[in-house]
Image (cartoon, rainbow, N blue to C red):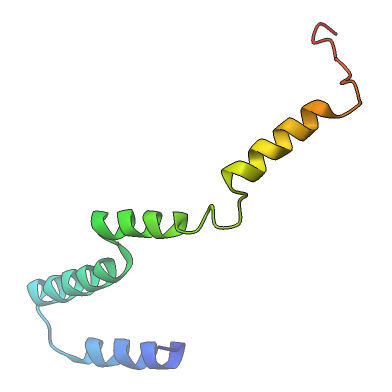
Length: 87
């Protein structure tokens, strides 16, 4: 709803002769409806987390390729530079 519609709704509600308990009831219903729309259940949060992990490893290399890469890197003709951690 845009601002004009909300202002019209507010004007309409003010025009009603609601008692304090009616106003409280209406407010609670509005809050319940808005929190139900924004607060996912524990099950929904769990499924969202699982779905976010789906396919994480889709583009990773298979075991044989990883093994070959490790073996090839060990055969390479270079020396690693050791860095002292005492500095």
